[in-house]
Amino acid sequence: MAITRRDFLKISGITSAGIFFGLFDLEPIKAYALANPPEWMTEACNICPYCGCGCGLILGANSEGQITYVQGDPDNPINLGSLCSKGANAGQLNHIEGYSSTAWYKAADSERVIYPLKRVGGASDWIQISWEDALDEIADLITDERNNHLITTDGVNRLETIAALGTAKDTNEECYLFTKLMRSLGIVYLEHCARV
Ligand code: SF4
Image (tube, rainbow, N blue to C red; front, side, top):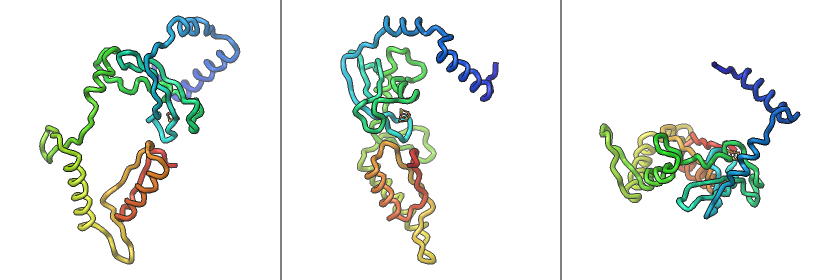
């Protein structure tokens, strides 16, 4: 059955009202949670990657390195321990379709890209290159682009053929430096997922 946005809002409202007025029995859910408490061997603080707020997380992992619980970090000044539903489910971050639930974290580790990859024009395979080569290539491309396309008429210093995208994981200070660097190159198309 297709559920429209209006249907969804109605169902959500009725469910919320039902919980508020005690119409639904939450005891089985509480009992399940109490009977299956999370177990963890290690804990680590991290930052939620889902939006620009950057809420602090505390992640617990079992002996196999599998995340077994997530909670908001009460010492983080951004969220003071609270999380929205996306952050509260950050334990599913490394889930990869096709792997069993006990193997997903190993698969994620083995598939995480930790070095630069390059695909030559027309090729179908990626090749691994060093960070030095990657940075040199990027610098050369930016230089070429600037030499060929920088607009300098009417006192303007404007490069419209490159866009720059920031990340919510940058601090204010890093974003400031990022913007300064891009502006110094004449780049005018700047965006950031947080837009704050
Ligand atoms: S917990 Fe929610 S509000 Fe906080 S950073 Fe993650 S997605 Fe954003």
